[in-house]
Length: 158
Image (cartoon, rainbow, N blue to C red):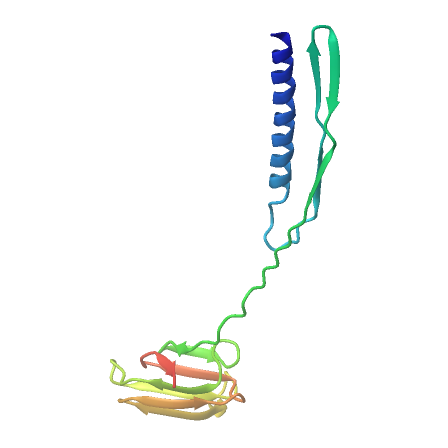
């Protein structure tokens, strides 16, 4: 009976040590998804002593070393260029909106005003503008600084 208790006790201890080491290794490999995790190493050694009718036998299991390296690189996607422009506002070309040809359907307000601008503080900054009661079409150049829209429906890339 004593031999059985020793075997169960030592076996349970060895199993608990192995499970604990495995948990430490799994928990240690988690963390920040944008960082590269460092390799983790664990060593498990088990010793069991068996006593049978006065004879003693000691068995030592060879150390087990496990190395696990995981790398996860996360690259953020650049924001997609704005494919629609709200009907009201002043938008910076290359920052808020991209150059291109845009269309706005007939304005529900009955009047759509738009302007392509070379600056933002003077009447002389108007490159081109229009008042429309129907569908509006505008081509915003890469050299334009701002685009202003008032009373229009949303603009979509054409």
